[in-house]
Length: 252
Image (cartoon, rainbow, N blue to C red; front, side, top):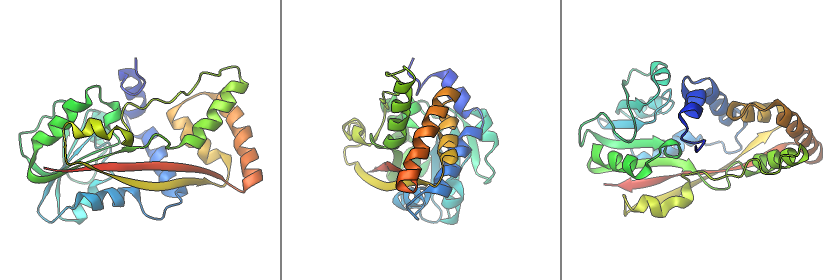
């Protein structure tokens, strides 16, 4: 079963926000780009006072304060009850599946679905649901990663795995990335792609490995990765990991 859509894997990662918080905190503390990705995505949403925004796959609602500051009413949708319970912004929260949103047609002016669709088995169905709930003249923003995102960390992991006699580990095949624009155009013909360039700057190995640990528990591999990252830091002064993310922007 695909590790991105496996029910067991999703429960491990998202039954509560513990692992997700580690990754979000890593982006906050170690990003090279001084502009927050959250702010950047929100700017592309072009939210105006009085609008209703639906955030599909909202997690613990990290975008909602930004939406509220722009005068929006927010509805957060997530399949994880544990995540939904952690939302503190005061928005309306709904537990539901992105492939069958428990919302009426044309309920909102803006819809966001950020770093979610690679966890959805039927992405076209989910995109049709986003289109269904947005009013004519509205906008849909879908954030995801590019194929080369975080590649240097994965390269360190592959080399470490090879040293351990596990040469086939970490062949990357994300089911939804920025390069899949043709798939998105089947639902949103006028979609455009916006790219956000960034990098992690790690002055020591531990925060990089903490980030990695939030996705994969593998002490043996982690020890081998630490040796390699320590060497990179000794040679280069820090461990720089390029990041490539962005969003699809579609007007209805």
